[in-house]
Image (cartoon, rainbow, N blue to C red; front, side, top):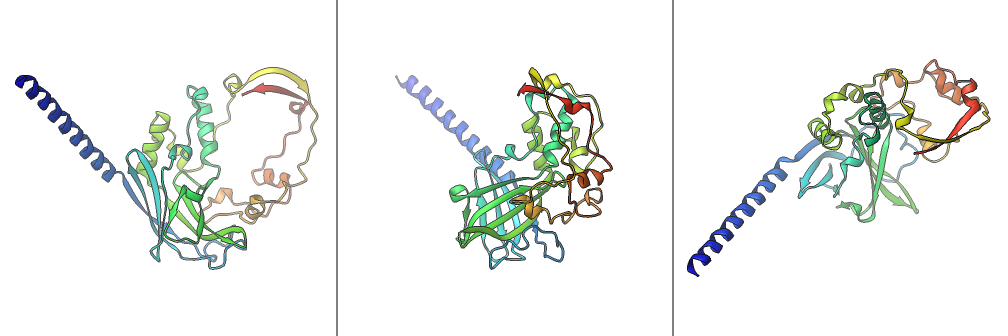
Length: 294
């Protein structure tokens, strides 16, 4: 019985030692996974096309932000934003896989479609709002936090804080920051299974994708075909309502590439094509359509 007791005691000690080492390792990992970054505040003179202008809460603060940080704790990620006045806003349990471009499994084996998919995700604005208990703030006036990936390159992100004013949520502060490059590359590889360097050239800077035939069989299954009619509405413009109304005044951003700056405001869809020297297609291609399943 004494021998059995000693064996059990030894096994328990070994188990405690392993758990202790694992906990120490987790703490070291958590300590290592801490990324600080500065936050830029832009005045109206520096960014005259800011869509917040004319849609702000009273007491809009500029400048407001100082720094931010991304942390890993117990396999959970959080991002915090610090104000010059000592305020701190934190979004916990953040799923970065919802922000980093990811490859659909159905096209991973097709290099061309993979490139188009990633470029399409990267070069479109992605803005997510967090409200209620989805964030914490030392400033109780803040009722909502938006985290945005703008459409200028992989690393340019934004944070917007909102306050309630007469029942409407309006921007109280707006900051711009660069997402830490090493962490972005790590996330990309983790979520896609391929190194970020494979696609970095087209995600860090705009590069016109090559024009190639697309294997539509990877994207759809044709169930039936039918005739359609086409009406050319190129001389009209999309309805300017909601976010589009605010964005209509923003023809450029604080660091918008030259190629993306139109020479004049667009008043019709045709103008949008004209900025790229492309005209809407008028061909028999619009004469038929297909019912497809995703």
